[in-house]
Length: 176
Image (cartoon, rainbow, N blue to C red; front, side, top):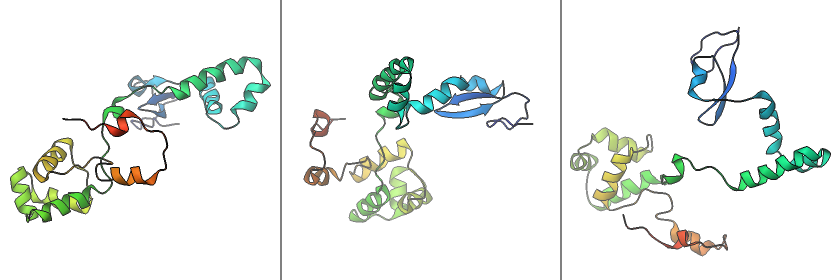
C-alpha cells in the first residue's frame, strides 16, 4: 500500500498535491496543505517547459494558443516572499572573521557584545551554520560590514563587463 510522502501514513488513494513548489503524493488529510495537481495538466506542464515545445505546438493547432500563454507566463513570474529577501554572501564566514580580527576582538568578546554565545560565533566563522536575520543585523551593525550577496563584489561585477544591460537597481544604493 502506498505511503503519504508528508506524514508517512499508508493510504489506498494518494493525491498529487503541490506544496511549497514540490509535487508530493499525499493522503487526504495532508493534501489540505497544498493545491491539488491534476494528472493531465502535470503531463502537459512538463512539455510546457521542455525544449521541444515548439514542435508540440506545431503538431496541433489547439496547443499553440496554450504555448503562447506559457511564453507570457514564463516571462512574468509570480512574486513570492523570497523576492524581497537579500541573499547571504557565500563568503559570510570570511567577512565575519576578518572584521572581528581587524577590530582585535576574540570570538568570546564579540559574542558578549552581541549578547550571543561564543559557540554561535565559532560556528558562523567556520561556515557550519547560517546566521539568523537578527544575528546578521547585529553582526553587520557591530562589525560595520555587509553580509548580503554582492556587497563586497560590486566593483568586480562592473569591471567584468559580462552584462551590457544596466538598470537603475544596479546603480542605486538604498539607505536603510
